[in-house]
Image (cartoon, rainbow, N blue to C red; front, side, top):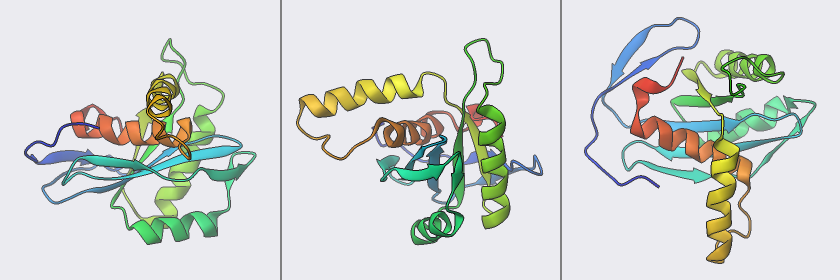
Length: 166
């Protein structure tokens, strides 16, 4: 997890309107590592720059059970979503890119919460490396690489919020 440092105003851009705003208050961020069978999720607070992986969310051919997902969102009350965008190494869109974008748009419209897409290349590898470290320390009993990847999206936002693409 990143070191705690002084909070500075961040500029965020809405997925639909492309409108930039500056927000100086605490951001409660929920991140999603989209998949067709399961989706990793994490929640984080910009006030203390922490991210916590959540339980894997089951998907059926890339479609969540929306009522259950929206209940989880309501429970955590985030004011910003980050959704992983699976790109190829050459910057081209992968087969899952369109589905991840569709999920992000629907999430945005269902909740009216600002939603950003996050380049997720190599995030699973980084999450697996981190998971290996946790396992070596005996702390990874219920962690998943997908939910750790979602936590890494949040940590990337802490380091460089302007670097995340709307």
